[in-house]
Amino acid sequence: MTRPTAAEAADASGAERRQATRRAVAVLGLVAVAALIPLLGPSAALTDTGEAAAPATGGIALLRTVLFAALCVPAGELFAARLARRVPGAPRVEAPRSWAVYAAAAGFVVALGLASLVATGNLLPRRLSDMDVGGLYQTRDGRLALLEVNAFAVAWLCARSRRPAAQVWPLAAVVLAEALRAHPATEHGTPVGSALTLVHMTCAALWAGGLLHVLRLLGGWRAAPDVAKGPGADGSSPAGAALLGLYARVAAVLFAAITATGVWSALRRMPPGTIVDQLTSTAYGRALLAKVLLVAAVAVLALWARLRLRRAGDPVAARSPARAEVVALGMVVAVSGLLTALPLPIRW
Image (cartoon, rainbow, N blue to C red):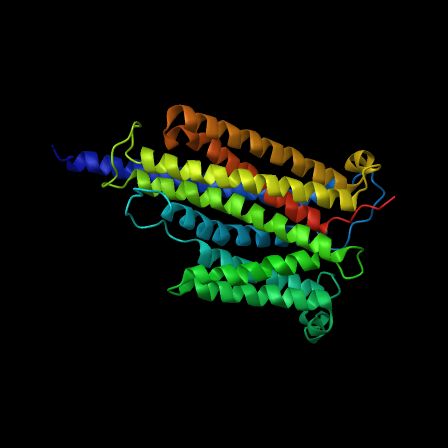
């Protein structure tokens, strides 16, 4: 086998750098687009509804979007790594660099921001004296906000430790805090609503974050020199196809759970007799309708990816729709952040 010349190696290195640059630009563009949803979404959703927006609605929506993303990334890494260990003949290569440390740091920062809003009575603080930090311990929302701050701090420490799998406990604490925060103690049927949100958020984090890390794993497996050659152009076809197939089976269960809990929660917020009207006449309903349409698009992309994988038996064939699925899931996360900041619909 002939070795590449210095010129060929330089060309290959330059091509890789250009490809990495294009990917970075594309990711930054997608992040910018996703940020516009919580920032501009409240004004668009509230148009002609007669509802009043709470102070700092756009900022709260953006902070919660980042918080949800910071939850999805490490949860997905743990989930996908567990799936990869169950794949027979998986390549013995170094796992992609973990993003959990950066996600936990981002989660800690936005959790502090949300706690500062709670400390000022859900108003935008203009100076430090506006915040009653000690008062956080005296209210339910304040204690939950502090729980999220501490949980992300512990998750950051776990991500940097020799046992990153321990992140599952602080991440579970964040999900629990969000489930309790979304359903105040004064709400009718609070335990049921919190349980639905707990299951919904857990499944959504595993689905979105898991697919992202599965695609990152496949990228590393493609370059593995010790992978048995498969039917595709790259050697990772058998193990990669097995990993995607395993993820698809689990994702189908997660999707069913997300759909069931989402429909149940929507019916609790908007009774069946009013849901059709409120989906178009209230800000919450409009955002919920947008989320439903995005989830439907994600389901179509997921089905397309599974069909291509089944026909070709090669993960390369499913990568394009799977990448589009990740992007659509990112939009779902952004709309979910928007939903948490909009006024709840009136139970007619």
